[in-house]
Image (cartoon, rainbow, N blue to C red; front, side, top):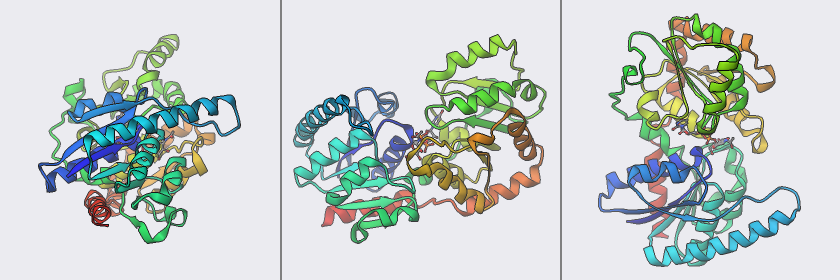
Length: 366
Ligand SMILES: CC(=O)N[C@H]1[C@@H](OP(=O)(O)OP(=O)(O)OC[C@H]2O[C@@H](n3ccc(=O)[nH]c3=O)[C@H](O)[C@@H]2O)O[C@H](CO)[C@@H](O)[C@@H]1O
């Protein structure tokens, strides 16, 4: 089949689209894909590395309040829809799939105007603005959380999970911590604040660095691509030299392979990260971002906490002491980790990619 994928702005929207493309390719090896992202979004770094054809639109988000900027945004949106229509006419897709972010708004809207079947995927329990806008004319809607059901027309909406779960669940990882200068003989804690990094997590980790320096378990700190330099500068200012069991990175490109070798995680509670953590059965400490629509990360995190798979620290409780105490609790207790791992795996959705693929076939058959 010929497929246009679009989702952007943040990793949580991009990786599910790429994961779905792998499932489609397994079923239909001759399939052709085109990914349409935004000019400035992180998809421009992520997608071309996979070898998938990639095109870009200039687009920006709406402000929630009335402002002159919104006229400019509207202008960009209409221009982007116009270009998206041309891209669609040239590529002739059988289906157009949107996984969230402003750019998918323009691409899927253009496809709907051209009467091409469209599928949208909502990763969160609280629907994003783009998917709410696209829902009325979408042919099918795939959800990762049951809690989002009431926000979409029921007759064409299905609970499918997050396709990234299936991608990571089956992974045969040959990653070794020695590739980044660590060893494979110690349990490794991975700290990352979603795809962009999280200032509040970085700050608490910086304050706790001298504690991490004294631990025997390994710690990998992913700062986020734009926060790496300032993290290093602050380390210098604090006069702290990370010991050999600590590694600081701006971003991890091969996350599924790395996650498969990770003992425990400290992270935000973005939906795609959680799909990965549960698919692989990894114990986690979740620090939900309070800055997202409808406080959805806290709801995401709560579902793992209730299952016994995760511990939660809210951002207002986050401190060096709280972070270290919670991390030590998990990292120094292998039995606790094993129990949480089992409970995380029990709520994983290793078939999610398959379910979304079926939904795409449904949309095309209509
Ligand atoms: C601040 C914000 O708006 N966050 C939203 C965004 O989060 P965000 O983009 O952070 O998305 P998620 O946490 O859901 O997913 C992050 C993705 O990036 C990957 N990754 C991360 C770090 C790294 O170094 N390498 C790497 O590959 C993770 O493995 C994962 O696949 O989209 C999610 C899914 O719609 C939402 O639930 C989040 O609330």
